[in-house]
Length: 305
Ligand SMILES: Cc1cc2nc3c(=O)[nH]c(=O)nc-3n(C[C@H](O)[C@H](O)[C@H](O)COP(=O)(O)O)c2cc1C
Image 1 (cartoon, rainbow, N blue to C red):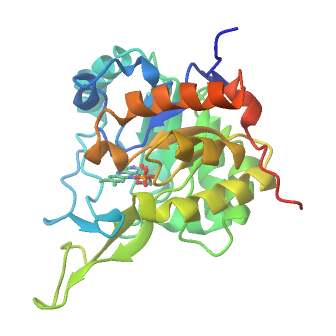
Image 2 (image 1 turned 180 degrees about the vertical axis):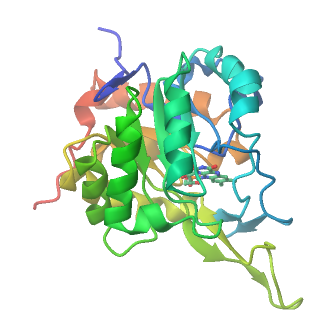
Image 3 (image 1 turned 90 degrees about the vertical axis):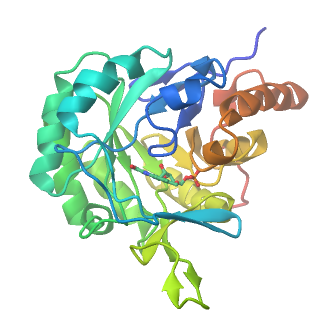
């Protein structure tokens, strides 16, 4: 029997549990030159807003121990250009195309959801509820009632699977997860970046012009793993794990802890072909472990409680 790497996340079926994480590899063409993208079940694009956004002033990224801080500020080409220029190419790479959206306010999310619903060839809509690098960008991810209201309004405007992307920057992430589920989200994904800072004490300057930024990379993996573990037990809908995944063992750590699929983010800046390496690694790890269907390991962690 051949290995089966396919996974089913409610209405979203993927040939592989690997996805790209929003904002870390553009919309497909940035990775296409490195390897055959069919190792990915889906490509998730950088957040798209209604109007083009220039993002924050430079510098916008800084390296930290085992990670990076970014404060890009949601730079993107805006809905019209994305639909005309980028989405058709994104659909052509093979993996399913997942569109990640972000709004300044409630109405912008709903507007985007309605518009994307009318576009062909989109496998799911991911709601970036939680951008820590723009003013007011955290409201929908930190207040359960606001989150529920927004996810419900988007849910009503589309037939596409809705993925709610959660922030780790909250006291009780399960409360927000349950609010998104109650509002009709089909899938959750966790985590977005952790608010952090990096400074140059000699210059008395922060390393990113925005002062604070989002921490990502291997440094955040233990936090992401804890959140995926907690959230997957708190809701009935599937969870996508993200945060510091750098190799096949990281993927399997997330999957046994409750993730039905995973996203690769910061690792793609270091190793743009990580999708291929990790895909190969997954196959050999599963063969070694005598596992034929990767879906069988989801949530199999034994905690004794
Ligand atoms: C440079 C950069 C840009 C990002 N842009 C977005 C974005 O536009 N929308 C979004 O939902 N998440 C964005 N993220 C968050 C990632 O998708 C991911 O949730 C986070 O980086 C944790 O995963 P990682 O440690 O594997 O990178 C961005 C992350 C980085 C590093």
